[in-house]
Length: 436
Image 1 (tube, rainbow, N blue to C red):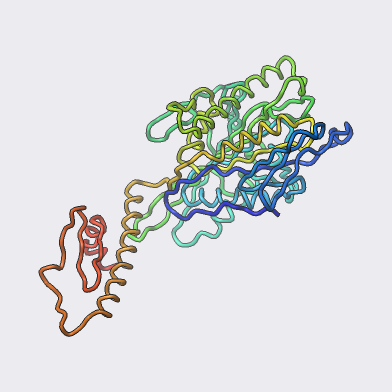
Image 2 (cartoon, rainbow, N blue to C red; image 1 turned 30 degrees about the horizontal axis):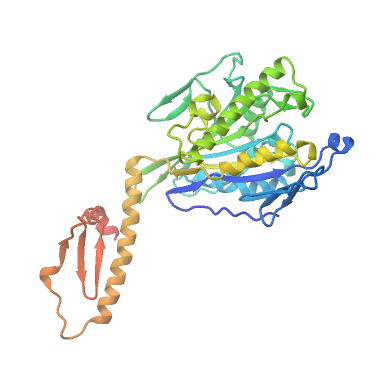
């Protein structure tokens, strides 16, 4: 089983890179029958993917390193536990999270995200996340309350459709507001009470999704699908009042990039492929603009996909990208392209924060400052006790002074303790003093 190099952060606000994992599927029956050879070697312990040309002994193999890699024999539950579980945990704490699968058509993106929901060991990231979320809610204690809502949309030929809507011919608009950011106008959302409810809604939406057959995939996704879970948590704070925080999880199944010569797409399938490749190209341009450090403009608005993923790439979100590749030698160029794409994405920096009322965030900051202050005071008292002598007398005139930096400094024998102004003001409150 591969080693997960990502650690779960425990800070209210953190700046971390997009986590990138790679999964290689086994050779399918068609590839075996045609006689194609394995061109990909996966080292799960080292986290490396090595690709070599089987028809050229002169060209050296290319090696890429990622957070976690999965070989052809990897299990669905291992993929979930090592990649998606930390993101779901963060969403339950109030962060935004995004998980998306990228890769050439026919490489197993939908299998990774959805799997076979009727078979427990073959369930993908999305159904496993359902059980995880409601398992956490079931363990909630005291006055903690949760509200869970879901929505499901697809981007088909650069048009947004509500997969849970009554009118499947309706096209929705992408809007933006300063208070909520980018959103879909009139997108339906349903409150769910358990994992089964969520699974039924997912199945209903999946029936409305655009799929079609190509030479490379009999059930090729012809659209990008985004299943969004919004989790609101209300719990009692130390001040006795109820405080609300909200996490939003985007589960994205991207349509695969494809070459017309290999898929044999014509007519409507060719038009779909053109739109798919256009939006994926824009996604690549966004990733390049975010990581090169020189671009003054990031082209989020050039496609609806990147517009909706704006927060997930370089914004307020914890993001995990699963790059899916095929092992056959005839897909060498596409595999290298996917790995380079993923290699750039792991350099994107996001700044995720807990979504809560600004007053609650300030209260959280004050609580942290008070804890630090109490530790400093305890350290100062220990030092003064060890260094006290009969000849030493405390200078009452120097009990406190204001430094040049605007912070109050309280003098003690042997050590000066710095008290942040905000925490000082809070300490003056009688209610807080009682708690201390």
